[in-house]
Amino acid sequence: MHASYTRLARTAVLVAGLMAGSLAHANIANGNFSAGLAGWQTFGDVAALSSSPAGLALPISSSTLVLSTATLGFDDYPLTSGHYNVSGQEAGAIGSAGGLEDFVGVTIGSLHPDPVNFTSILAEGSGARQSFTVQAGDTLSFTWNLLSADRDFADRAFVVIDTHTVNGLQVLALGDAAQATQSVNGNGQLLQTGSNSFSHTFTSAGTVTLSLAVADLDAADQTSLLTVNDVALTAAVPEPSTAVFALLGLAAGGVFMRRRQGGPAQTSFT
Ligand SMILES: [Ca+2]
Ligand SMILES: [Ca+2]
Image: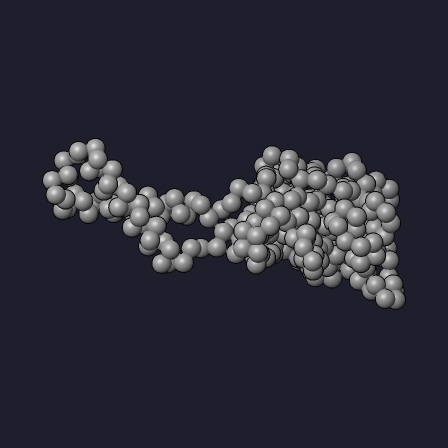
C-alpha cells in the first residue's frame, strides 16, 4: 500500500504540473517580443528592442515593444531630428482615413479626448495589434511604461480591445504624459510613469483584436514613448472541485493501466 500511495503522490504532482502548465495559453504569438515584431502588425513608429538605442537611455532590460509619437523631423528639438524615433518609420496620422483610428478599429475622431468641442488636437501616433482567440474567463495582461518629453500637453497611451461583437469594442486609457513624473536615469529629457500592470478578463469566448497605441496631443514636437512587456493570456484557475476530479480521474487511469499491464501491484486489487 505504501508503494501505491507513493505513486498516487507522484501522480498528484504530475497532474498539478500539467494543470499549472495549461494555465498560460499560447494563443498570443510572440507576446514577450523575443522574436521581434513577429505576430504583430504595426502602424507608425514601432520597434521591438532588447536594449536602449545609444543615446536614448530608455529603461529597457529585456525584449520590449516600443511605440513612439516621433516623426523624423524636428520633433525632439533641440535634440537632433528623429532623436526618439525607434524604427525609421514616422508616427502616423490621427483623424484621417488610413490613420491610427482605422488601424485600431475605431471611428475616425473617436480617440479625441474632447470629441464634442475638439479643444485640442490629436495629431499623430503609433500602434501595434494582434488578433487571437479567448475563452470565457481568460485574462489578458501586460506591463507598460509611458515615457514623455511632453511637459505641456498630455500625450496619451491606450489599449483597444475589440471582441468583434455588438458593443464589444472598448478603448481603455493606460495613462497620459501628465502622469509621467519619475526621472529616467541618464536621460534629462524624458519622464516616466514607471512600470504599470494592465489586466482585462473576457466574459465570453471568441476572436479578439488587441491594439496598443500612443498618441501625440496638441503640440506634436515633443515625443512620448509607450513600452510594453509580456503580453499574455491566462486561463481562469479551475474550480477546486474540478481539479480534484481531474486528479482522481488520472489516478484511477494509472491504476487501470497497471492492472492491464499485469504489474506487481495487480494482486493488491484482486
Ligand atoms: Ca504632444
Ligand atoms: Ca510627434
